[in-house]
Image 1 (cartoon, one colour):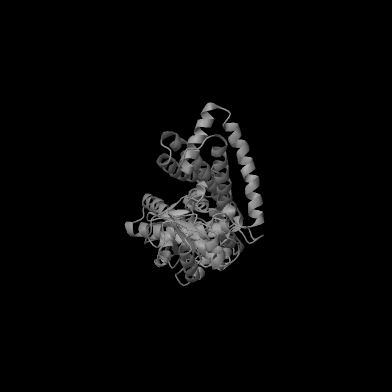
Image 2 (image 1 turned 90 degrees about the horizontal axis):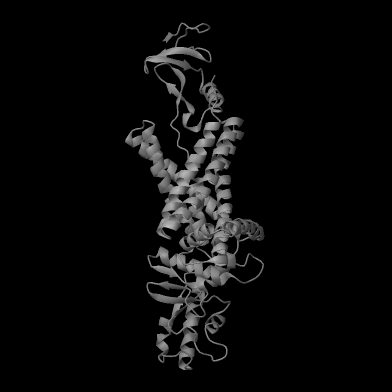
Length: 454
């Protein structure tokens, strides 16, 4: 082994490596390299150096067989902090697709009907059916959803008798939904069919005289009554399973975006196609997992009293900001166009404001959850000595910037896109704004931590 002629450097054999920081000539790389006695010494030096380096210039130890010791080399860095805001927006959109504000929050035995509507609609989609949720407009006796063209009315009461009776007018005794199927709890289906047969015999269902048609009128739900009650509440396996299924689409989408951005980043850092594909796959899995955890945590939190109270405070603050923006003609137009794009229907005035403030409050909670989830692994690394306090602070700041920048960028992009073409423009603008805003903010903060050289 050859060593440099620098002062304070010593010559040694492979069996007795040079001391920490010695420089040797590495035949493998054909240049002088600092060599370390153990991996621990190399990691210690890497932590020291990395505390003042940007995240895309991190060092990592590797063992060199040619020199018989450890060197430090530039580590290809694939960071998803810039996508935290985008992930939060995707997760928040999945959350807003449910009627969680109508869930019972655990205080009383109500709200499970809305949970049943959401759970059954999601199950239909998983079974490959085309589902259009229509119950949000609160049309009197209107369907809760349309499945493959069939109108469905969901009723979940404590007993089959109560469930079926709730579909009949108390004054006239007639069936209230003549052109709709009555969806009942899975465990009440058989008895509900018998009761519907009785109703048909009694002439309570207009246009139907054959009791055997009861099976065509009554639809078997995917969930039992007890399952629906649990889905409406936080802290149980049924509600967690529902949240996982509901967040799956957002997680897969976030993972796919991460895979693409990581592949591009890896190639720009000199990786081969195989290395880039491997890195993108790993990073996609990490991003998808973080998105899933943050989404489920958010949905569980929003079922609690604390979650409702937090949302109320955030929505009140958002209303003030939106009201200020709507004082100008341009601001009002942007707000109403954005609301139209988000809500997929024309909204004006207070209706537009309320929709955006509700959505924004959920976005903030989801972004906070995404940030928290991203900080946990670094906290573990800090406690185990794998990263320094400075590095922890830098990563935390970058994650925070990514979450805030991504969320803000998504809203700005959605507003611009909505003014061009509400709906499609909202989605495209939000996506581009979220990615650009998050990546730019994270990269900008990362540069602030780079050590200034004289």
